[in-house]
Length: 182
Image (cartoon, rainbow, N blue to C red; front, top):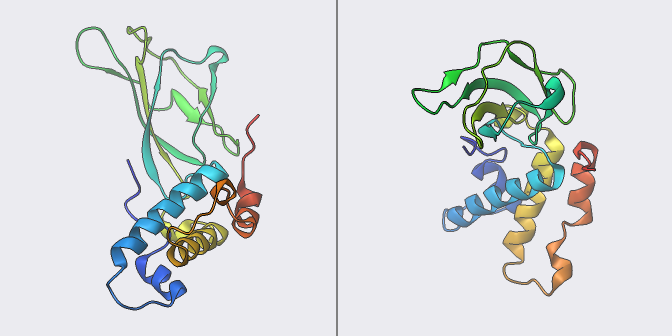
């Protein structure tokens, strides 16, 4: 589920762009959303709290699972699907997030019901992101504003493959937060 609000408001972006009228508000809102997506993809981090559902076939061997989302704030619910009847909820405390792990590590901390479906029998609902829009670190917000300004000023002016890369100044802002993938 997408975040309820963006880390950069329309008012923030319009102030940064030095534009006041409402004529291009829809465009600026779309650019803000696109900038958030790009910054999240480049940093491997979710900026604002969002609810995600992780679907697994089986519980992790060894009792630990590295989550593809970061940072993870909380486990909302977990359930195991059955071939007949309602899903079986996982008991509170049977799964826990390893504090300080990056990427986030989910550990088995108690007994778990076993899935009866061969594929997608486990559903884990998570909240991931830095929190509220005001909790997003300032370098991410600044990177978003810089992207919005570039796209606003250079509409349709891409000249080739080199334009697909993030600008160096934007990359420099998010670099300290990037989680490298091996």
